[in-house]
Length: 327
Image (cartoon, rainbow, N blue to C red; front, side):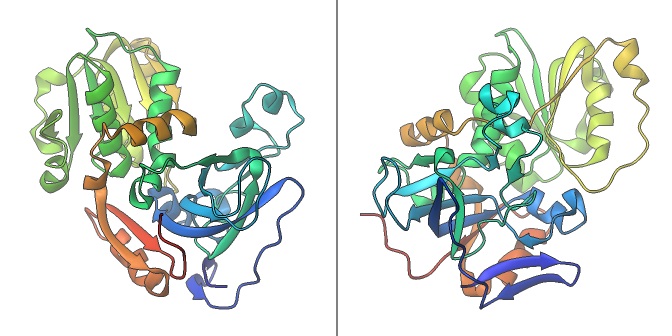
């Protein structure tokens, strides 16, 4: 099978990767479409130390029937596969299992291949009303929803989102839908900010006035840069909340004294639940399709990767040939 593979020699499109065999309680999934995430790009810069088949954003179809799902069912899947036995797994927190594998990130081959495997318990059927192009956004949308699971954002709270990358734009769309109070997205690209300016206030990073410092109740850092946390500490009010969504390979020294002096709550936020994300997609309340940059066939996956690396690129998708269309 074809796969997009990363190791010390770089990224390669391999034509003859062995087709995986599902293990106990696992499903074999034929990929319909996969998305290139910033985390994937960071992996090729050294984040997580992963080598192997890349990718964790996908929509696919079951190769064989499993549990209550028939063969051919379109599915998406949560990316963390826990051991199923530890305290975290018993509390439905597989994403924190100390022995977990993570699709295309930690000790598990990713989804940028014609087939891959995941535990059946990780899978969710995709509603007929959700297209492949929408369904591939389930994982990042779930990650954005996790913010609202972790913290209480009150109607009077002022919310500032840093970063106009794919995740930052999704968070901005979601905040505009969920939050009644003032919301602002700050980014570096006017064309990307324009994607959501009909839904929320936007501002270029270079235009931030000094009066905005220490004035925001909640600041969400989705910049993917270590400097993002520093800016968030400048903007958040004393006893406010910073939500850190960025994962990155590079790091730099950072003075955390303001966290102590201003008694700031710093919350790390990673993966979220898929069911609420699929529900939002099925209701069509978010213009998620605006985030698509381009769609490339698997045969041109390396070109897709190069496009995803371009500054200002939106979501680049890879479509796999030979898959059946949605009925």
